[in-house]
Image (cartoon, rainbow, N blue to C red; front, side, top):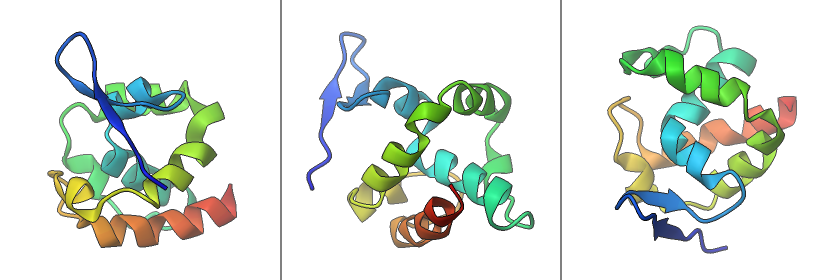
Length: 105
């Protein structure tokens, strides 16, 4: 599966699937990290490193209908792209975290 990213009129890259602009705002790695904390391992706190976590969590809460589809797509994303985060998680680790979240959802 190929995950495409388009450049919106704002010049910002966004995911080109349903709800992709919201996931872009949240950040794929932050999304996985936060859901992993919520549903799998309450000792996981990498997501807390982000200053804008409150607004990102609000967006996550308001986009529940997309969560399963987003997780499935993230599982196919390029590791190098997922590596570009400030949470201290590499792309391969993010993909491993997706599996148990999907089982819970």
